[in-house]
Amino acid sequence: MDYQTLRTLKLSAYSDAVDGYRKVSEMAGAARDRIELQIIAGMKRANTGDAATAAQGQLRELAKNFHYTQVECGLVGTALDGFVYDLEVARRKLDAVVEEAKAAKFTVNADGSVSYPPGGEKTDGKLPEGGTVSGLTDPAASAIGRQAADFDPNPNCRRAQEYANRIADALREATDADAKWAPKLRELKADDDLTVSDRDWADVEKDTSDVAKGAEDYLHSIQEPPKHGSPKENAKWWKSLSDDQRAAYVTLHPDSIGWMDGLPATVRDEANRTVLAEERGTTQVQLEAWMAKEPNRYRIVHRVNPNTGEEVDVKERLPDGEWEKWEAKRKDLQGRIDGMDAIQRRYDDFAGDDASRPYLLGFDNKHLGHAVVSIGNPETADNVVTYVPGTGSNLSGIDGDIRRAEVLHTATERSDPTHSTASIVWLGYDAPQDLLGDATFDTTWADNARKPLSNFLTGLDTTHHGGHANSTLLGHSYGSLVVGETMRDHPDLPADNAILVGSPGTGVNHAKDLNIPADHVWAATAGYDMVNLAPPPAGRLAPLNPKAYMHLFDDHSAMYGTDPTSDAYGGRTFSVPDGHAPGWHGKLMPAHSQYWEDRSLENMANIATGGNS
Image (tube, rainbow, N blue to C red; front, top):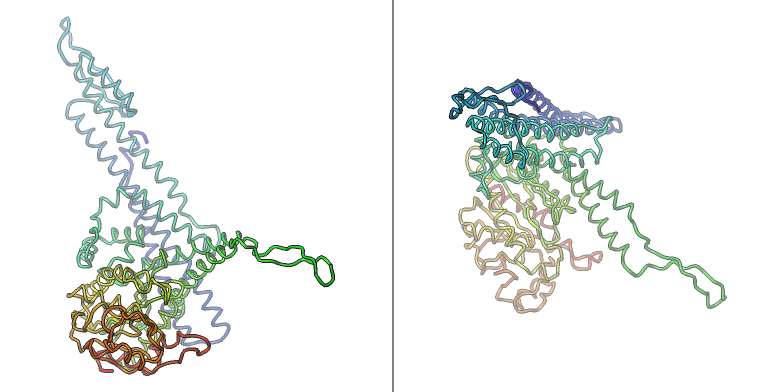
């Protein structure tokens, strides 16, 4: 970029463009919400049949287009913000050196060169003549230029060379900014069609990364979020930002904003839904590429039939296991897609009742995949119940965990129709996957979950409107250990009640160790729950008959402390049917999963709404 261009460039025109793109982004986001949360919901209440279903499907596609427009226009606006910032930095440097040169009676010419007046000691009665120098940015050339200026008898030459070099540096920075942002802005465009494909969303993820790298200096100019900030520190930081600065962070770092405890639920939901769409597209593209790499599972070998002596072709499984490895990855990719689709369905199926509106308060596809989904707004609800799932939980199976949060939400509405409840599934940690493997007997999974769960609950309390909500932690299976350790290690945790079902122990020996009144700690275990198979400290497998279990191990020990359903634990228990006996259809799981059925569900709803079981 040349001197005159940078001096006369109207940066306000780019700032106006930023405002325009941001407004389009906001309008597109509002249109998407209106379609998903109002129009489709209204159609569901008023119309049924194939035509209505088809119309709703078309509206969902339109909502996806608006979502894509929202994200891409947000990226364009933020990229222009970064471009303007870089140019402003360069122009401030240029303006500063020009003013210094003029004050020293030097002349800055139209091409950026600097003319200097005669000066120095007279020789033969004459001052050394003035002259003109041009800026040098190459390090070697700059060194030679400075050396030449030092030998010049006119000291003004050296000063002029310094001014010229600084001018050249400013122009180089402006040129670099143009070269950096021009291709990034050109890439921020959609395909020439009306379909937002998986590949389009995968490209959005790449676009976001590219713009974020380019805008690092711009983001550094904004007050940065606190490192490892507490929910209150995060909330204070967020409130300190302008609307444009908030938009920039949501646009460039939706993955970070979505997990930032202490930020409003609507902000986190918006950020996480963008990450969900991007990850869904990226994973689908990965699956399609993986499907094209399917290896042979069988080979054809020639055998001789011993009875007839004829040669026959026999299909034989290849022994190297390559296909099995391929299939394992295919299942993993497909399972993650299924999990992401299950989350999206909560928005697609939303029927317009604000009390049951879904909020995605955390999402990523890392490791086993994580998701935090709330049914109802936790910032306005009178009651908030946070369900922590246990062994075997991952993104692929999130649909079942969300269903549990949904049925509990419905049950709380029956239990206490005068107060609102937000029912949350918190899969913010990697859970052990092997139900009876060694990993299940390891507390490391729970140890790593304690701080994230504590921060999440504290964040909900920080953003809650009108004071503290009645907060209940519900831990199932290994999730009860996560709940127990979190409550044990965080005395100030904003939790009022604990529900522990199918628990192998909570990491404590008494309910009072959870730092809430013991009569606010409730536990239940079905008689045929396979958690009874867990080896107690005595090292013997507990029989499936609960009475026999209690007889053999009358110290009431569990894997992780005292059995929370025992008198020795000191909490309260609620009734739950024994469930299905082992061998029911060859499965042991039903009893371990039945707590969200019938009387058990009603009991948990009563506890979560402040009543008794």
